[in-house]
Image (cartoon, rainbow, N blue to C red; front, side):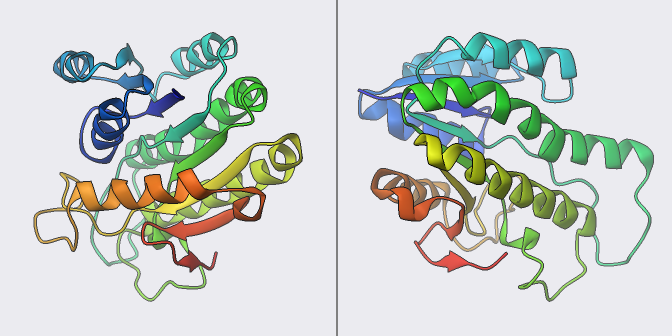
Amino acid sequence: MATVLIVGASRGIGMEFARQYAAEGHRIIATHRKPEAGETLRALGAKPIVLDMLDEGAVVEFGETMASETIDIAIINAGVAGPRGSALRAPGGLDFDAVMHTNVRAPMQLIPALSPALIAGRGKLAVVSSKMGSVSLMTSTASWLYRASKAALNSALKAASLELGPQGVTCIAFHPGWVRTDMGGGSADIDVQTSVSGMRRILAAANDSSNGKFINYNGEQLSW
């Protein structure tokens, strides 16, 4: 039985990770913001922990708490989309802070804090990023703040892979696909079960050769 940490399991992809891993009998630690999500996670068999990714002190405290664990799989899924639209409009300060703090700063706080627990378990670290964060694959200006945040997250994951890989931790950035969730919308390509099942298969098979890679849920390697 593996210990699986899912950061951002209130709904959608994170909740589905918790559901699928719990169904296989793994020990699940799952963070959430809303009380009702905690009740659902507990019913699935997970240990729910309230965590607001915009609360810097809470993120630091949570990371310190997790340092005493041995973590086999850590999935940092929490993220926000921010303002949409294709025009190159300067983001407002509140929008910028919400997106960058949630999508970039909080993971960069958590990764070092979780490192001892991942190293102890020679575990696997995954961040749920997006193909929209790929600079080389960019063909649209839509949601450029979100794109910038995911490009920064990809860079942080790649840096983590250089330090943690030699210590036995496999680090992967995922593109989950365009998923039918509250963020992805009802017209997206795939359902959440397909996306999560694909990412879980990749994590299960991941080894040293997977470290520092950007991978689609279907196994395709993506360029940064």
